Amino acid sequence: MEKFSNFTGLVAPIDRANVDTDAIIPKQFLKSIKRTGFGPNLFDEWRYLDKGEPGMPCESRPLNQDFVLNQDRYLGASILLTKENFGCGSSREHAPWAIQDFGFRAIIAPSFADIFYNNCFKNGILPIVLDKSVVNDLFQKVKDTPGFNLSVDLEGQTIQLPGGESISFELDTYKKFCLQNGLDEIGQTLEMKEKIEGFETRHRQSNPWVFEELVL
Image (cartoon, rainbow, N blue to C red; front, side, top):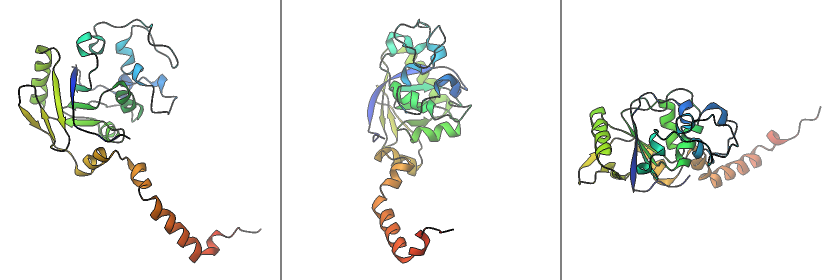
């Protein structure tokens, strides 16, 4: 997992509450566990006018021009602005995989579903919880300002607006550490590889009988 660094990105708004993981990445795309390649099918049923299937080329599919991510002003967006309880529904990790693969690095919402929220940190995505009134104000600013960008400072836990205003956000210290160092649980375990191997060697030497083959 890549380390999360401070960045400035274009904001794309999805003005919906209770967006579930089946809307984020429909169930037919869950056959793959490669973590990559899901970006073209992010919000598949909202982005396209036909039904998507695994392996179907998306370049020639008919687009829903009314959907925000198909509008020119939001092309290249890396910050997703949305409403409360984002990521509810099933616990599929494919949802953050699709969001990350599409190019989003941060999501701003008043609240997230718990499992989705935790899965974001395991995949290098920063989910930012802000007060509902602040989120609503950002929606208005995005609507009024084409090319609206925000600067995200993970270390300082702040969001900088174009006019210089700064918004602070809370973040668990451990989750912040994991993002800054590009670590999930497996990555943290691998950092202890030498100590684990040393323990296994000592354990085998001091308790050889544990490793003897059982003869029946």
